[in-house]
Image (tube, rainbow, N blue to C red):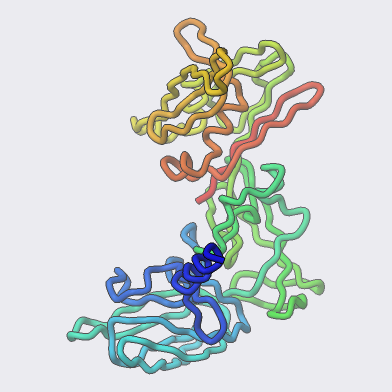
Length: 357
């Protein structure tokens, strides 16, 4: 009973409710926000007309939502539609609230005048049609052989990188998107701002490995592909950088320094720090046998590994290196790696490294 009381007390203090729904505190709900405005839910403001790596507004054409939050103003808040239509939201004690239907595709503006005579502040957000990637479009989760929970940023940014369209480094692809209305019905023969759908409601949008955005909340990502034969010889690479290997007991070992130079060539050319591996042994299981680990210098993430020293170089088994750079803590510290995968075939070994915005 005591445990139940504690849980109930936690719920009563940790989950703010309003009209039967839980507010989503994806931004700091206070007047000290650097933007001067904070929404309880939507729109999410950190994005441009076609979106960017930081997120999506969370709104789709046809959505009717209660727009509410706090703002450093006591004058009405304005939502300006792409057509120029303006909806004013009353502000009282810095709080605003109004139900709005977002029935236009394109860039919207939120505008307010801060208290104290500061000039008008204006931010942009976009409202797009709901898009669903379909075959033959390749997605991040296809390259990674599954979904990574760390790549799902829907709760914070309305973006799920697992569903990002992906292409190989230096190449381009076409995204096939099924465009639907708020009820999930295909929008056929639709002429949008960035595409036209066919009689099935399918739009095609080309993108390259340098792009971050496709449309709305659908993002673009890229992957590096490296292929070795069964003797460990490099037979294909997305980049010109090479990686020396050792094949021992059917395990592929990669030269640690060359591997990081391959993954982060821009950093190496710019003279920036490239992650350095520290290998060590520790009897973690207390059985009198040392367990080998590698630890990266900045994040101190420890990964079980096999290590070979040869000619003053360190070689680490490929699975350990890929697991290391696939950790979100590592990606946040460096260059936004979404994940890695390794595939074994009778005649070759394929390695994939996926990067996002």
